[in-house]
Structures are given as C-alpha cells and as structure tokens.
Image (cartoon, rainbow, N blue to C red; front, side, top):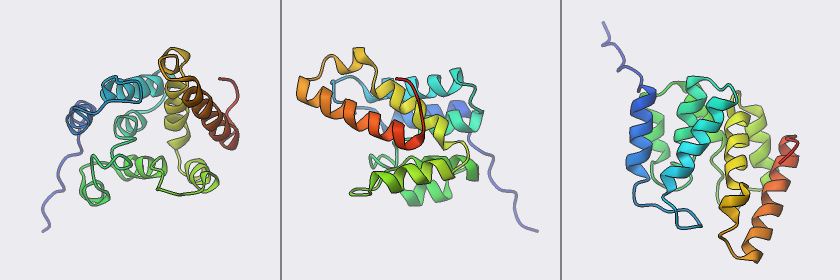
Length: 154
C-alpha cells in the first residue's frame, strides 16, 4: 500500500511561502515586492477567482523571478491546476509575447491571474513614481499584452 500523498498547501501556507521567498525584493518603484503579490491575489479574489487561482496569483512570479525553481514547483504540494497556472504566466527569457499570451489563453484559470497582474502593474499611482520613458515603455508593453489576451479597458 502506497503512503497517502502529503496534504495540499492551504491558501494561508501559499501566501506565507510567497511572502518568504520574495522577502527583501522590491519592485521597479522600490516598494516591497510582496505588495504586488498581495494586490494581484486580491484582484483575483475581487474578480471572482477560485482558491486555486488565488494561490497561483500569490506564486505567479516565483518561478519567473527565480524565487522558486521549476523542480520545486513540480514536487510541491499544490494541485496540478495551480502548477499549470503558475507556469502559464511564467514568461521565459526571450520568449515571443505571442507564444506567452497563447499559453495563458490555453491554460484554464490563467487569464484571470494575468488580468489582475496587468491591472496592478498598470495602476497609474504605481507608474507615477517611474520616469517618463519607463512609464511609456511599460504602458505600451501592458497594452500590447492586454490586446493579445483580448482584454478590454484599462
């Protein structure tokens, strides 16, 4: 008889993990990176996302930023849908944006996470502290990704 698999991480445990592995990191504006993670998770919740989507939101940048490895994720006590959403929103270096957005669209639940991520990234208050060329570059980048994902509005 095989031993029972370990229990899945609770949402509180996922949040604590995300806060721990991203501690000390800051965003482009110099703010604690965990504020972004909390905002994306809250945005997913406010948009009617599931607990799995909220968990993936907490970890949406962990692999891309190198805070957690793909190997760690593969063996983590997370459901396959959570792992798939995290990997869907993990952009590889030099990956064409068209391939990235196609993967998001092809992965159930991932679009809501990326929508919340883009909404927080494009928040005018957040962008206001950046220099004008950076603001413009990011605004164009986010608008292009939104268009490829079929998202309307800001």
